[in-house]
Length: 350
Image (tube, rainbow, N blue to C red; front, side, top):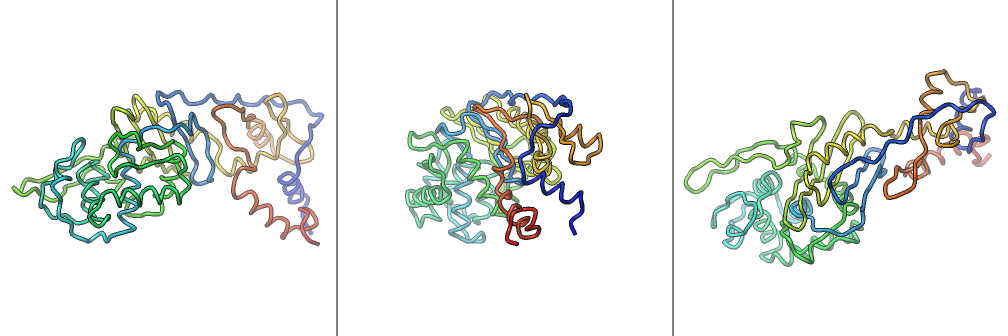
């Protein structure tokens, strides 16, 4: 026997609701998109597997050193973390940000990954690519592009493992979200990305090399646990962010930013002000009318519940948007479960 409350809940979840003769309850206005300097950005709720909001998300741009996240994934796939690598001369003499590697030094793959992801060392990236590419950086880059294609990063092209500007080196915010999600399957990358400051192996003279993470949000902004910064003349400032607060993990991407830290803070705060997956499943309890909510009389709710449901605003179309309930990958799974559990109500087999 299904209780009246259970039946009402299931019907509310599965059937579109019609307008009630009751007076409309004034809803909370739809929040404006975050105001940031980035020319391209995305905010993704990894917990709910839904894109919360985007801006110019599919316009290819230079990506700078966030390239090194893909480099790290390929390296971990190809070689052992305890392998010892001799630093080649061409890597030690590279331009841009370096970890101060010296030709002929011997480093473990793990220490090189730390130098690459924490210090953003271009010399470490080239050393790793050369080693994991069996002596060919070009062969390693081919593996990067193959992995990008495998992940569905259709607007991405890698020309090097460190992110220096090149006309054939570009991506989009949408593809970078895909890359960050893939990197979450690599515990070593997540562990290294959380390092705020660390001592690297001493140089040949015995001098200690201590480096600080280029991601200044680590340890200074609540919940930030990664992931990678970037900054070149063509790309301007780029930042891939991973933030964990409570049950929600939010991924933020800013490209072409004047201040990637400030922009990321804005996106993170905005994201955590949006509805999580539990709130999204409550959306069918109300119908939208003129941008506000109308509570359905048939469902027995308390006044606080009615106010909360009525406050869920309509999502506007445009260059930025928040996904609807039916966009959630779990929607189909839950629907099928309901049909099996409650066939007479949910339309499943009798």
